[in-house]
Length: 153
Image (tube, rainbow, N blue to C red):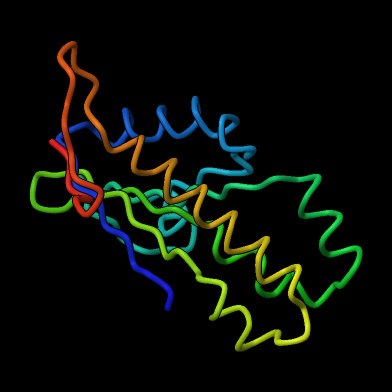
């Protein structure tokens, strides 16, 4: 089953976005776009609070994506949404959120496409690792965390 991930950190939104930008290539991704949703909403006539911080980060592996949709164009409908990470402020914390799509969920909508099921689930797993890394606060002393914990200082 797909998983909604929510990681809270004391880092600023800008610090988290910078970490994602700096480490995306370690996970075979580029940042295709970062949408400042305050600006997006304002551009469409919405009055936005001055302290509204909400960003949508679109990750991509261009070569893999191109090869995938060239083989089966329908994959594009399922390929793009799971590559969105959102970063925002909530209750004085910065939140990194993401929906990690599991292999069985892809299987349910594209049962004949085993290669895509595995590939997309693997990409989602890499994004999950990337955002967990981005949520960590860098310190000089070692930090011990459990795998179950998705909240970081």
